[in-house]
Length: 172
View 1 (tube, rainbow, N blue to C red):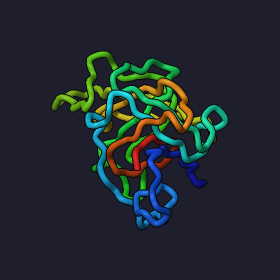
View 2 (cartoon, one colour; view 1 turned 60 degrees about the vertical axis):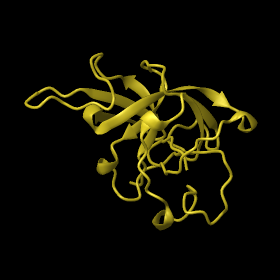
View 3 (tube, rainbow, N blue to C red; view 1 turned 90 degrees about the vertical axis):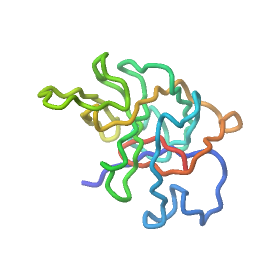
View 4 (spheres, rainbow, N blue to C red; view 1 turned 45 degrees about the vertical axis):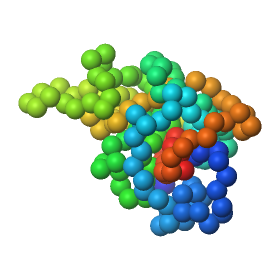
């Protein structure tokens, strides 16, 4: 079964043939690694996908906070470690948080050697309904969605990159 994908991209206009455009053919997309620590305190991205519909329609602009701690029920932008992302897949995912990491986890998180326990994050998507579990050590960060904004008020994200997949948020 094909996976529905949702992405977010910088609202700054790009030429139709620019290789960073989310709607460019997958083979021409840039695979620039994203570091959530480099994101501004508040940033916005455009959703391009359907995995969070009907709550977040394709084309919506979402505003994220790099500093606010998400709680279960919040929409979050998950940043996957780039070395774990398959070619052509997104590094950042837009999902709804079901269970956040334990309180001792700070991102980027590294599991202690010899530790048998695994800190995890559980998220859900809406279309199709499904749950995903991520090891905290596989994430570079998690940013809280703080609202929907209209395009004229969307701040520019100053970095090129690509995101897509089961619901995502990433600059392009």
